[in-house]
Structure formats: C-alpha cells, structure tokens
Length: 311
Image 1 (tube, rainbow, N blue to C red):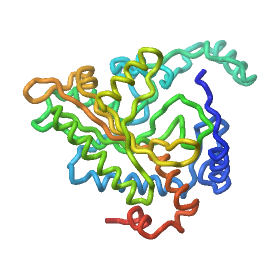
Image 2: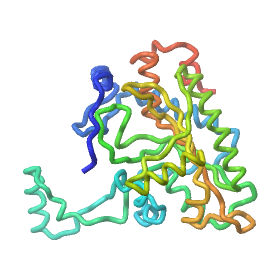
Image 3: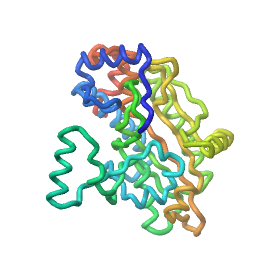
C-alpha cells in the first residue's frame, strides 16, 4: 500500500474551506475529490487559455481516454522508474459461484482481490504516454517533426495525501514536441518561459527551477541525479498551502527514450527526440483560489479578463 502523506495544518484548513464552499467534494479516499461547478469553470477556462496560447504553433489535436493499453506502459519503462505510482485495472472473469463469493466478501469490506484478473488496460500516468505509440505507428516524421496538443486529460498517480493539491486522479494539460534534438530542446525552453509569463499574468507568484521526477528506489536516486545534472526537467512552482511551494507545471526533455521505445524516426531515418509540457490544472485552480479568494467573481479584473474571454 502506498504511504499516506498527512496534510500540514494549513493544507487541512484550506481543504476544509474548499469543501465548505462546495468547490471540492470529499469521496472518502484521500486525493480523490468531486469538483463543484465554479471549480470546473475555472479549470476549463484555463484549459482554453492554454489552447489559445498554443494555437500559433499549429499543433495537431489528439485526445485519448484515461486508459492505456498495458503493453504500451510495459514498453515505456514506467514500471522500472515509477512502480509505486502506477495503477493497473483488474476485472472479474469467474463463474457464478465465484461472483457470489466475491460479492459476499465485498459486502463485508474484506479482501476480494483473488477473484479479479489483470486486464489489458492500465490507468494513464501522463497525458503524453498514448501520443508516442500513435505517432510512431505512422512511420517516419515529416520534416520538422510534429507538435501535439494532447488536451487536459485525466491521469493517475497512486500517492494518497491529505494535501488538496496532491491528487491521485487529476487533469494534466499537455503539449508534446517530437523531432530533431535541437528543435525539441528549444521548444521546451521557449514554452518554459511562455508558461511562466502565462501564470504570472494570472497573478500567481510563480518561478521555475531545475527538478527531478520521483524515481523509485536506489537506482532511482541515480537517475534523479543524472536528470538534474543534465537539466532534463524544469518545474514552475507556486505557494499554495504547506511549507513548500507546489509544482504546477513541468517541462521534460526525454531525449530519445520514448522515440526508441515506440519506433519514432526522423525523416532521414534517425531516432527522434521528444519533450512535453504539462500543466497540473487542478493545482493551478487551487493556486488561483488561494491567491485571489474562493469566489472567482471577485477576482481582479485583469485576471478575469484573461480567463473569461471568447477571443
């Protein structure tokens, strides 16, 4: 079982305020909440703001469900780097007697997992994951590569916490660049600066820093050190609640990892490189609520004008 991270006092107080205002709805499971209409309105408006900002790049729009074929996850190396975060989907395939036994155990809230078998699906851990096999299946990239708008997709991370900004299921607003190494790295750096301006323009006290992924185990610490040394990952952080700022966006340069795993090649036959940008939409909404107040109608006009526009 994943280790539960208790909330800091101000995180718990902020969660209580969000629940009282009907912005979040408790489900009884840490890190899994319903969202009220006002919360979702802000999230969708931010999603649309990112789409407008990305439009000049001419990205291809791709949308996938929050499920991934198990073989794709196995090929990606995710289970080596992040086995503690993965979510697998199991289903019942037994007979009537087993169905009855399962229901009886479940009704008593006892363990009924022995009646479940692993399916061909897993929960998507990052919105970019289904993009790479889809692009790789097309054959060599066109000259200049491709940019993909993967939308604001639900993703899953098994890390239960009392912090309202650390969710197990959340929306990740993702853009992906695939192409030549220098093109991909330049795109990531440009979007890092663009995203910082975007969030500061919404009145958030945002800054970026070199970061690392939460790799698993002793070998993971070596991977994290290498990732930091090569500056392969940046994060934009905002103070929401708790002793440390919270990452609300990340920018990852994967080099040829995903391209090699899924057979993505350049027009000349070389192996492509990939990078992605991911905004944590719920975290950004929480940062806005914490900064400007729980009623979006009372937010500063310059912030509202950026979000509540049809342009």
